Amino acid sequence: MKPVVHFPDFQVAPGKIKLILGGSGTGKTTLLHLIGGLLRPATGTVKLQGIELTKLGSADLDKIRGTKMGYIFQQHFLIKSLTVRQNLLMPVWLGSLSQDQGLVDSILEKLGLQEKTNSLVGELSYGQQQRVAIGRALVHRPALIIADEPTSALDDDNCYRVMDLLSSLCKEHNAALLIATHDHRLKTITDDHLML
Amino acid sequence: MNNLKFVWASIRQQRLQSLLTVVLFTVSVGISIAVVSFTEQVGNRLEQSTSGIDLVVGAKGSPLQIILCSVFHADYPTGNIPLHEAERISRHRLVKDALPLALGDAYEGFRIVGSNQKFRDWYGCKVQEGQWWQQDLEVVLGSRVAERTGLKIGDSLASAHGLTEANDDHKDAVYRVVGILKSSGGITDDLILTSVSSLWKVHHLERKAVTVPSKLVPQADASDSTAEITSLLLRFRNPLAALQLPRIINQGTSMQAASPAFESSRLQNIIGVGTEVLSVFAWLVLGLSGFSIFISLLSGMKVRQFDLAVMRVMGASRIRIFSVIILEGFLLALLGATLGLLAGHSALSGIWFNEAISRNGISALFFSSTEWYIFCLAILVGIFGSLLPAIRAAKADVHSILTR
Image (cartoon, rainbow over all chains, first blue to last red; front, side):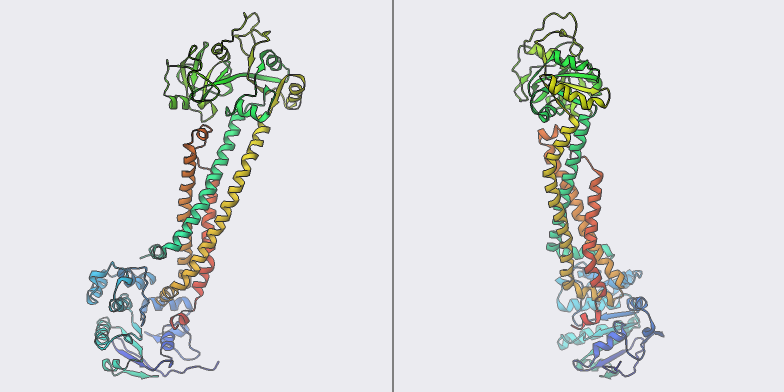
């Protein structure tokens, strides 16, 4: 099979941030989905903490995604029928992990959502929803956080506020942060860029 | 968070669609259960009331009316029969036992039945309070009669003609309550029992002096050609009687023979037409409920495809997605079937409060084993209806959904 798109080799260390920059249609989301195991590469490998994901079966990939990865989407994709707390705890539930109440409370506090824990996410503002999505990506202490266009819809103030929050939380949890974006404002948060 | 909480939240979010599905299940299960319970109770009642009675002899007329009147006590007599003719039949070699009945009066709508002392054994009556009647104008009340009329031992009552609720057509000859029966769940709960001669006395039908007492009504002379009763219940000595006796009675006497077994089955067939139509309707609605779950979940998939895709991204396996959708179908069906069960019995309780139906022993608290089959079938329909949406959700391509 002839490859449709070719990606260069790269790696990201724990607690570090890597920016994948590129315009629309350059394959940023495809690359993230390859890393997350939602797509299989024709050739090449993806390794996470020494585990070669490309060799894993579907069930093992589900498990790795549930325990070692956190996802942040541009449109948040929060579950509208659930409350803030329930959305936050989705990875814990789906990964059958034990809930760290202290961690949950601390994330809620840092995200400024303590007063909203029992609100349905549909009742929140766009910014609040984004913070829930960030919390959801961190609550199960993943090794890798994958963020797809996390700031494209935000103004400068909110863009930097969100990135400060995200990068500080990733550092605090020693999680690698991989951001795919066309938003060149984010170049200021890290020198580690990959242009597609 | 668990699967159940997640599914319940999803059901609540799509409340209108969920409500429609639940209502359809409730209607179909409710109708099915009400029909099944009603039919079974009527069948049991018919069987219980006719057991031990092989043939009923009454005045010429409709055999069904004879059975409705003399066995189910739910219709008027076709007329009277001469006691001496009934006596002759009761002595036939093919007759093992015979029980005379004198009907025609009632108290507050409860029928007064004149018979002899054998009635107690024929119907297995047990006295709860007081004693069995011994003298003329003494009566024993069925349990429901006592409960509804409030009559107690020692009270008096004046009967009325027919089965009306009027009370005092026969004010000059009143009955005295001497006993109250234990509830049997059968027809005797709704009867007022006395001797045949009590009814004759109330109607001022004086008998001539007894020289040879009648076997059926000892207070009358066996040769009294003017004495009449309403009907005669027979037990056969052997199966041959079923072939010969009806013919002998219908052709050789002024009386009419009616078979309780045959007429009950005819009655069940008549009732059966209505219940069958209702059953077909209920099955159609159940099919529609399954289709409704299918449509509801399938259209819900469009709205929730991102939720399910995100769940997959967060580590949910295909089996988990499949089971969550199946659980949703199961819960909707369970809710509908449970409400249907309650609705079916509530409908019966509505009927139950209807005095006439209640007297025929229809109870809202009767649970038929068939009901549990209907309940389980409804849940299976719910699961079956959610199968295709569940398979589609489990097989969905997460990458293409998230890049739309």
